Amino acid sequence: MVLEEASAIIGGPQGAGVETSIAILARALARVGYGVLADREYYSNITGRHSYIHLKVSATRLPRSLSYPVDLLVAMDAETVLTHFTDLTKGGVAIYDKGSLGKHLEEIPSVEDATKARVRRACEERGVECSVGGVLKYLEREVGVKLVEVDFGRVLKSLAETFKLDPRQLSRYASGVVISSVAVVLDIREGALSYALGAYFKGREGLVQQNMRIYRLVSSELGSYRGLLKLGKPSIGLDKVLLATGNDVVAMAKVVAGVRYQSYYPITPAADESLLLEKYSYVEDEEGPIGPLVVMQTEDEIAAIASAIGASLAGARSSTSTSGPGFDLMVEGISFAGANEVPVVITYYQRGGPSTGQPTRGSQSDLMNAIFAAHGEFARVVLASGDHLEAFYDTVLAFNIAERFQVPVIHLLDKFLANSLATTPIPDIDTVSIDRGEVFRGSGSYRRFDLSKVVSPRAYLGAEGVVMWYTGDEHDEYGHICEDPEVRVAMYSKRVEKLKLVEESIPRERKVGVYGDGAPDYVIVGWGFTKGVAIDAIEVLEKRGLRGRYLNLRLLWPFPAREVAEEISKVPRERVVVVEHSYGANVSSLIAMTTGLAVGSSIVKFTGRPITLGELVEALERVIVGGERRVVLSYGA
Image 1 (cartoon, rainbow, N blue to C red):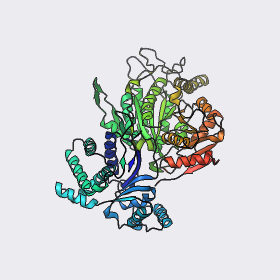
Image 2 (cartoon, one colour):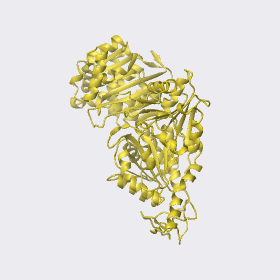
Image 3 (cartoon, helix red, strand yellow):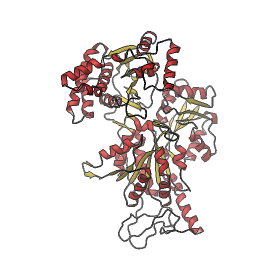
Image 4 (spheres, helix red, strand yellow):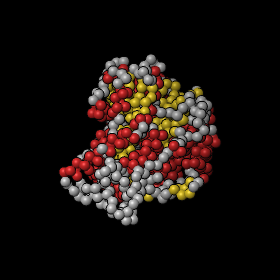
């Protein structure tokens, strides 16, 4: 079977190498020229709980969304087979470990009771025994799935004998069996796999040799299955692509933007960004050294925002990175930055709340928190990114806005983008410019908060001959505490009115993006990771005679009310559909508040899993054709 596009689930226990598997497979696929999008789903658990990769590979384009059912299921363990057997398409392929065949659902302690009940119902509805052997027979007989059995134990035993490995360490090589099995079934050439292994295990040639040995063992065992799901010849047309997660892209952009101080307290899913910055805290290009970049792991998020503010006052481009619970602790510091007109960037990765909520799952439910959390009123800017390329450019823009207008900027992303590995066009660094705002270069009398300008020139702490004061209280032009009513009105207004300058300065295309038909039957409004699936859904529905338009919000505060009102007025209000990973479709409230226009319909998902193409297409038809006003999505394990 030759496919232009294929979807897959690759699953196993947390800590067993599922993430390693996709990191290497994605490199091999991208090396050959395929487009890849892979979302990592995992529990808040070090080892043992179910973890999986939801993958799409395309020969003709860079994938924007994920889809069910999948063409390929790759199971390292029994739990993956039982959890995902209903996700396989007719005529698909299932790769499984021979050693898991006798396992029954009730024997697997890591499966939650609620999940067991759901899997049990699925088995009862199909009249099959809830065991690995039972569901595999059902898939083969009733769904036409082709079964590919791999004897993990035999392969690993042979590896141990060849390399004299400690048998207790063999579980570390299970990911190699997964990688090799997928490579055979998809017919990924050996050279591409060797390249991917070398890139991932750089400097550890022994591991490369061991994994190539696994590949040859598996190839010998599965020779008759080679190309069972063969992908078509790549025709994307890009000579080079960037393969990276959202976390990685933001970290790269911070280096390009000239960040010199990054603080963080470890929290999922934000920490990976800082870990990459630590790895490349001192880099060089052809013109010489870039850096150094100081990355500081602080004792908590309060210290993280406070130290970032201090670094900014001293003249360093500074930022901090966090998720919802950490952002809550930063709010007082953000208010201090607002009151003292301190440029600082907070990279805010949303995850499932409230409280600890779903620490490793995705969400877009922190929109209002990002915009309104604080006491008092002051100017802050909130940007959102819809894909990896936008995340790069928006990161640089965030620092330019922060320093030009001397405001805190919140760059709002979500776990889906952060933890998705994707092939994306390489950002054009030549189009990136750095704007550090107006800096005071004189000496002597200096009014840090000069009221003659909305944005006063700033001087850095320690500048020769310059004295300035910063306080948490209201202050006069010099920074001295002052509660005079006239000064209060002037200073308070000065800070808030920066928002007008920000909105006027940002080009329309950086505020909103529009995709689809210029004379639509319906308009989807969304932001963040909904971008790709919304655009793909519009393309599917266009083939069914429904013309759609997607409005991608990139500037969320100050809200681009004029541009949004113009777009949603193209269709009747009930055909304006907000799509969001939240319960409340919160951006619809923001639209109503700023434009006076009520959005008629919403499609929401708050399971912590991403919206997939099939479910969004069906939901849009229910809204546009069926007249429903609210659809709640829930598909996914």
